[in-house]
Image (tube, rainbow, N blue to C red; front, side):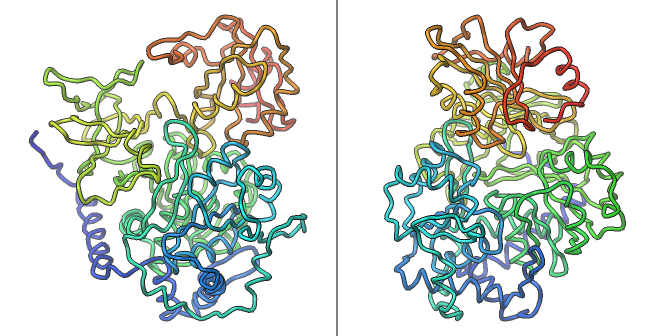
Length: 594
């Protein structure tokens, strides 16, 4: 296959030039990491603000010293390079101190999603085999529910930020470390770019959460590509992070851009639409990040004095629809909205340098291709030679990422799960690509827009959700015989809401009140199916014993064509309610709060 390189626009040429210069600087010294970067900032700009949180701030020197307290504790405790420490924390200064400390010792921080419960939470811990676990006070009740299943030594479990003094039998890390040395550990100098820094979890396309391997090198690359080259973060920026730090967008993209430049980071414990602009004013933030839902949540807020005359100039994120983009930029007068496309486990990204609403960039990244698939089955179309067919303008296709020898692609900690996503003989014999399961539409002049995730995943409230994982949990409910989970669109919302079609066991009674409580107990809020369809007919099985969801997705929750009973999740009352005609029309008209 002849490789034809696309012609870059002037902006693209400048962008790739900036990126090349930053990568040259990074690669001249292989002995770098998060830890070495923080120590360098503490040495070169010790008095400059590094971190802002609530009413407190830390300079780069203070940030480094706080990290050293924890680093020296774990050094004394025997942490060795390659050991894993699992963190189940909400956003806090300690999150950044602790991950930096662990990185200084060449340890790995496993960033547990604090919204997970029971089976998924147990799996997330067991997957990475941590030597130590750190849990905050807010996560303590949910961790305590599963700690016996982990069969973990109590002396290796630490609790931090236990502000409500919840009872536990573990060690208080902040008490243990408060009088330790604040000096840099000598071992930081042993750090190299190709060491694993984080395990960041993603649901991927199938099953329980997967742990993506994030090396220092990948963090540096993402920070250089998306932060410095694309959005031009510099030392004068104050970057506001309202999204969870366990997300790649926050800790894998924004944070590396910050510690690469010496910009300041401002964090909030949890996103709040009503407090967003007040925070921007308070921190004098110049830059922020978003997932598609955040701009919509902000647009839905009543006008506020804080949304005017603010300092916010740039926002970086993904999943922003055209209609929301235009309304958001007009109302809040943001100078630059930088949209991109990328995967936590991936090694290629697209960027919308022209800031065209609704687009995620041009298909100019070597090794990122768009191929035609059957929209019903997800099977790849092949030509007469047996190779995949590239998309033409107007086509919707699957994104594949080329895997070359020497690439920094690492995939998942579980190599078998990584290889499950590989596809061979795509364009030539024995070539290998990673199947993202993301569907993009190709437009003229190589522009692409986001179409959907295919089949086994959907995106809701900023999370990529696995239908198989949710189905597995629903099927464990005693009166459910079989379930099919899929994403459906709701007017005036971003992403796709979860919907579950279920067949019940005739011998057992189904109680919606009890089922609602079950759902609350086992699923994080963003995973809760918004709709439950009680199917009178058996779910249709096709192919290799897979449930056929095409008709279910098409019918969605349209009660005018569906005779089955449908329940709707009422977030305010935290239970399912019957979807009647009045509520249905409120939902369609955007009057029912999801």
